[in-house]
Image (cartoon, rainbow, N blue to C red):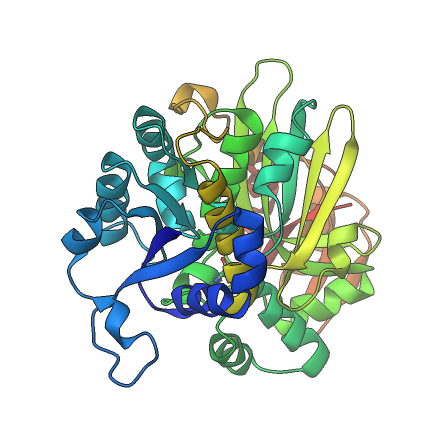
Length: 400
Ligand code: HSE
């Protein structure tokens, strides 16, 4: 019998409890021992609930119980979650989490702390919800040098964009639906403004390139500037509007760049067809070429599925170290993502003559008091120089 404590009973925590109860036979068989939830750390009581007696408000009860070998941190954020994770690891307990903010911010320190205490810090659910991505990168693709990793990493914003396109819903209604389905963060600003994708691309970059990339080093733009007009123009151009996280390893000097921004993705690109809450992540390795990981990127049970798989893995590796770690980051290893070159989609209220003065002969699609066009390939600085003085409504990278 192996005792587990769950910290926090929000969407993911309650999903973990549900999956452990529902699939207890299969889980015990995979873990080669019975997995039992001994405590649930919660801020309130749950009178009448079947798990009522497991609830405690005092973390030190969990911390000081030597029978608890695995702690599932589903509190979220970087305050209590950080403190309890450190205290658990220092007490020789493995910690499993879906908390991308914590991993992106303190992952280097926490994996080192796990190493020092001969326990594991596992976070498969922190990227891509239920999609297996952390293990495939670190194990199955380990023979590759990973050159680039990009994709749709936020279910909420992809769901919103899809509902706006397919059902002509307003942004607000689509967001409300995402919240009702348990996809959105407690504060959906993290989804909308791209912070959630930023955290996830930091984790993927660290795993792929071996150095911690911190959220402050990643230029991040969300979907607030995307309008229904952009979505309609994109369709006419044979593209879809998608919020992408992207990280690249530069061969010449080993430097890394990562950024988050809305893109017009060519409809022939695999990620263009990733819709709704689904996530799609492309990993480009020097031996494998491109591989895509696709599946439910958010939601209670898909996320719990990945968390409980980590619980099973931690149970099978009590007293043995797993492979998850990387070196610390620094500003010296990062290069500026605005130097990356690509064609740009531009929507402007300025007249065609003004556009042609700067870009030469370009084709435009005319709209209501505005027009859109596609620029030649250039970096962000060159683009901004050319656009200076024009009345610009949107400028998004194009990904072929
Ligand atoms: N809010 C996140 C999303 C949850 O929508 O993708 C999963 O990380």
